[in-house]
Image (tube, rainbow, N blue to C red):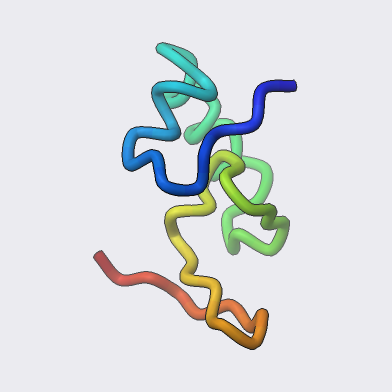
Length: 60
């Protein structure tokens, strides 16, 4: 598995390519509350990781 650089602003395209939008729709279907999370995974931009490790919703 490719691991994107944390400083990369376009990590979705670099990591997942043209599949990202489709994968995002699949995630919304099976995880509508975004309970499953990991750093730089599909949908992770919906969350902000605080310095102490807690997650907060991102309302961009």
